[in-house]
Image (cartoon, rainbow, N blue to C red; front, side, top):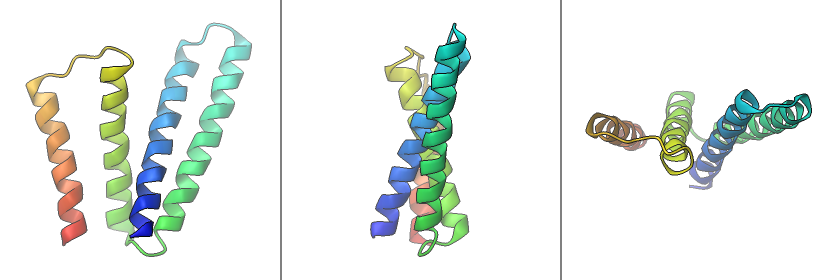
Length: 108
């Protein structure tokens, strides 16, 4: 069970890394770009380290699918709640399918 918690934490760090990568892309000054780049590297390093720890007990196929699913759903959530992206019916259904697929992978 703790491996799945670590896996979810890894996914959250992946989402944070994607958010700082977006900050890097939109930063104006070189010093801000460097700050965002360093934060991105650190967050992805933590995310991948946590993923590797969780894979000690969770098979690769399941762990990576859940990791990327958490990242995808988290990225959409960040886009909707922070960047004012719009969520449409098809996008909502697609996110639901990702969540359903991750749950099914855990059950089989």
